[in-house]
Amino acid sequence: MSRRQGLALVMIALLSGAKLVRAQQTIPIVTLAEALRRATQLDPDYVRALGQVDNAEWGRRAARLAFLVPSLSAQLDATKYSAEFFNIGTLQPQSSSVTATVGASYEVFRFAKFTDLSATRAELESSQASELQQRLRTAFLIESDYYGVLANQALHRVASERLRRADQQLTVGRARVVSGAAVQSDSLQLTVEATRARIDLTRTEAGLLVAQLELGRRVGERGPLAAAAPDSVPPPDLPVALPEAVTEALERGPQYRAARAGERRANALLRGARGQYLPSVTLSGANQTFDSKFFPTARNISSLTLTVSWPLWDLGQREIAVTQARVNRDVSRAIRQDLERGAQRDVTEAYEAYRTARATVDLSRSALAAAAENFRVQEARYRSGATTIVELLDSQTNLTQAEADVVQADYSTRLALAGLEVIIGRRLFPSKDVP
Image (cartoon, rainbow, N blue to C red; front, side, top):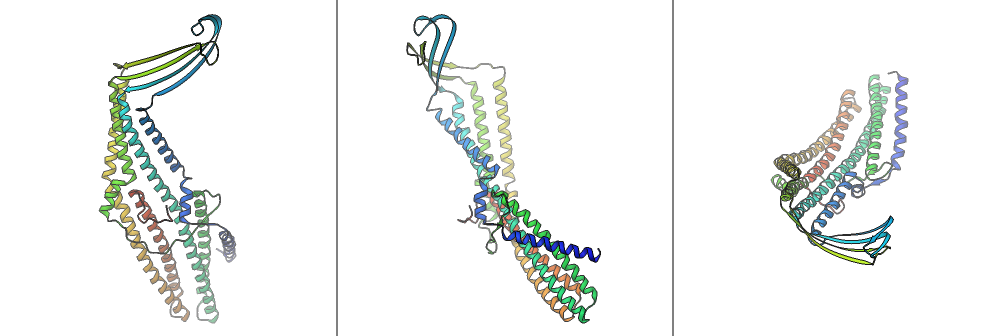
């Protein structure tokens, strides 16, 4: 790259960086609690899960009402004929007829009514567990985007600090070259480092803007949103041991609850399909009114009917329904058993991921302290001429990497905790500020 091309690249980086800095100053800031409250109701999967809960509640109500309330119907028919006929309502030849019918029907016995109670109860529990699971998953996605913004904001500060150090070293290096204490190559290498720092800052700002736009989309904003910095309290120990976490996940974890409820529902539907071999008893009543004009009142007839129905052979459709219900039950049972067998593995993976990330935070902070001290020593030695420019640049590179490692470790810990909470089904560190 020629000197002119290098200067042009530096100018482009400076101009684009200045524009992004001005844009960042006008971006509104959102807290995690506010982001969770606003974004949860906007997630399509969570809205669908809420709708399934509403559907299941109505199915449960309908199954209960079938034991208490008969089905009701009302009908009004008005007919105009081309020739007169004997009207049963007026007992006269007329060309028009109006009939009003009010009917009620009550199933005295149908085996599926009892299995529907069990099936709708299980379906409601399954939908409620799925709603909880989707709420936690949605929160996990929101937190992932939120922490992504925080991480990019922190990486932006790291890149800015790298550029500040590079510019400062470049000033010192040029002064040493002018005084004859260093060779021209020192100044050139420092110029390269300053240029790379500016390019890295520009890339970091672009990544930050994209992350902020994604966070804005999550919470219903058309533009970018900045994330408020959380507290700097070190990640605490988990309040439950690993065996307790496995047990709690199996008992109250939403995916395991939904699987058990799905198996119970499949069992109830299988019993209902087998109940089609039993007769059903229905009591129905109707009241009919006949006339030749609307709101007929000429003749009123009532009826009461007791119907006993016993299907003997329906061309194998009943047997097909029983077989399909049995297969669905077997599949639901296999899903439940597979999830429960994998519970210890899944919980252990998430549990250890948090512990590992938490330990990485402590180690990366120790490494950062060592890298900062090493850079301070190398910078002082370079100013006094006791070390080379290569060692100084290596120490700066190590310091920048250590700062980035601290950022990644911090937010990896937060995401690992959110992933464990999805499996267990509750917040491990409840807070009034975070739903």
